[in-house]
Image (cartoon, rainbow, N blue to C red; front, side, top):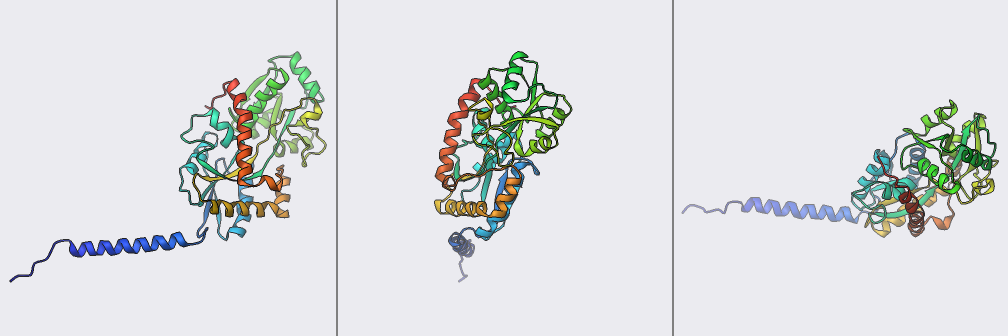
Length: 333
């Protein structure tokens, strides 16, 4: 009598074995301590900029605590929303992070229609550093101090111009905020970045500029622009001779481009804790602090470096800036 076999039994047996092996491998992988491989830190702006430099300095020192390489990946476009969106959709395993800022996690939430939520789709890790803006003008501007500048702008409504690095960016919003606080009017001229705006200021093509301290200080030192004030409550360590806006006569005109780290929503708390500790250790390193201070960055207090502090800080910034942005109907292009 011929032998009868059931088609597929052998194949089914191999499949079951393969599934068992895969499950075993997955279990081993899940049991590995975090991190067990390199981590990607998304930088949503172009290489070479102040945010990119900050990300690379931070990544370089975080690897010492984490025992794994932290790779900075520039994911640019749409004022940082493309990079932020990629991280929001990433697996919540701690291997994809973002070094975002005031624009990506506050301003973009109201300026753009986003496929993600700037708060709900991220887990806060830590605040990192902050940098105020410096109000400067072309060398031939008649006013010699901030009060004088405001008076001159009021006497010449609509005739002056200020550069900015694009609609919705920190320099653009700072210009709008300045007008609201001082009752002045001037033209807002958009550029593709801070560098070309500064070039036109030096050439006298525009009258004023709100720029990061690190970007503007070389020109201040060279006496090629007039500095008026930093947009902060306290003087910049990098520019101690320049008064604050409060000291110079426009109290409350506080604008800072702060940076912070987030992970995708539902990243485990234990992973967040490890990442937070690595950021704190990196920022405590004297060499790191010196390098960042030279670039105009300033630091948060130790108790402000918790995930909870970042969540509260972001919420406060949203409550401050969203009504201002909505009032003038700023929309991203």
